[in-house]
Length: 201
Image 1 (cartoon, rainbow, N blue to C red):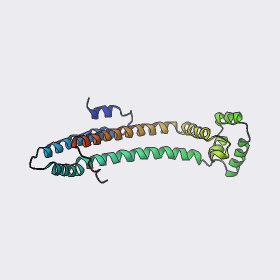
Image 2 (cartoon, rainbow, N blue to C red):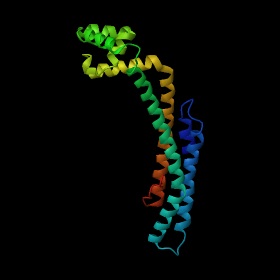
Image 3 (cartoon, rainbow, N blue to C red):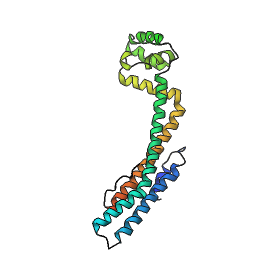
Image 4 (cartoon, rainbow, N blue to C red):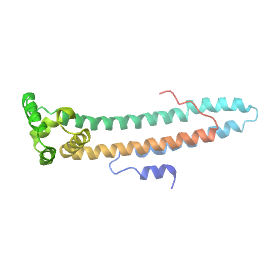
């Protein structure tokens, strides 16, 4: 199994279809780079220094430029997935089903509860309590930050579980693609014996 095939098989079910093409294309950039390097190195009329300059220029204008485009698309996809996760979290934190005065009343009541009772109410899933508690900074609720964070995560999962699963698929997919492209770039650097400039984006 080729390196490209290995990375493609690691993509999760539901991965963006273009990644099944982009990953082999990235490894194609490596093949092209090796061909360029071999052709230039075989030119005995050029000094080693001149060969390095020519290889750097050709790699930067050719396979590295293409690889940079592929990686940029993967990184933008990863950033978009992460932003979707943040949007869902913000929707939970900024819910406005309750008036702010009511949220403050609930938080004041909640803050005065013993810790075991606080935890029981959180586990109950009471929507008014969750909205009031999650709609303020953790230190205004009487909860430790780690407990507040865990409660946010649970609330987001409970409300948007299916969407979060799909976001997780996207994140893993783009992570695999970016890892594949890094493998290709490392191989090109190793084969060329120089550090090529990253193609301008």
